[in-house]
Image (tube, rainbow, N blue to C red; front, side):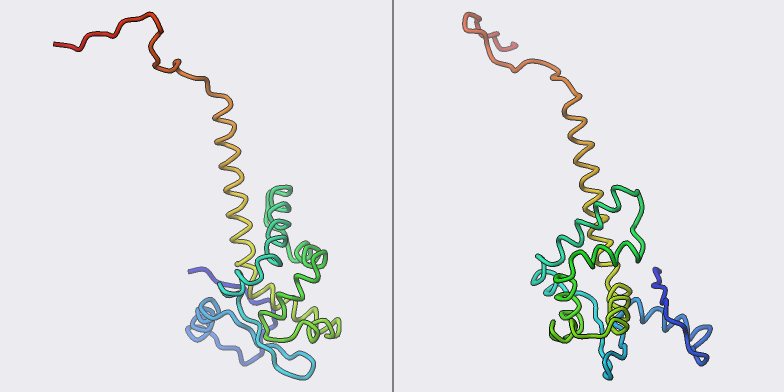
Length: 175
């Protein structure tokens, strides 16, 4: 079973053994995280189907940039690359941060740099799979289309069309 790695330091009383394994499985099933922001606890959730459709115009350029980075480097971009991608599309990022937290976009924009960084890191921790899966799918489709295109242009017709010559007679049926 896939596991998400939590970059946050674990408290000394963190569960161990079977309890830790159960907690990890719950993180996979329910990856939402609650963090303290501006004096209140805020839950950062996964992007839902509705949000992915509602905010498609914000999401699509981010996925396209991740796809481009994957094609150029041959690997999945790291967090520092992602921060650059999200920063270049900051308005879309603010929209997505607000959507996944239930905060207003103005509230998200007014966060301190430290709280904003914590929110961005948590958002990415919860939603990286959403973006990477879609970018990976786009890369795979692009590569398959390139293969098909290369195959179609390099193959030659095996025969001409089966149209009768104007002065030819029909072949009699076999008896």
